[in-house]
Length: 138
Image (cartoon, rainbow, N blue to C red; front, side, top):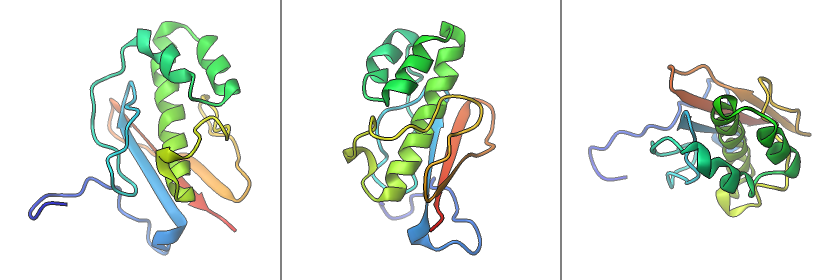
């Protein structure tokens, strides 16, 4: 990070080791790129609804099917939930987006799916943004 720059990474929860957690924050509409630092996603323009089917091809097949079944108005928010959850989880694994986003199912619904050894949760953030937290729970 350049001198004087502020980190936008989410603060680590009290009592949690740095090695055991990761977060992802993005604008509604999603941004399929990493900010380059653990626990951080750079802000980006809202994904156009026509591009979501193309981006969904890199997701788990069940997630892609869930997104395809939604109306265009619901699809953008659901895609962003999936992306921020998936990015937090992959960062927690230590592989980030170099890992295979299609390998693990995190779900597009209001509540993330359970992953063995992990607590995955959506984080309350201001309107227009989405965030997720992945906590390794051995």
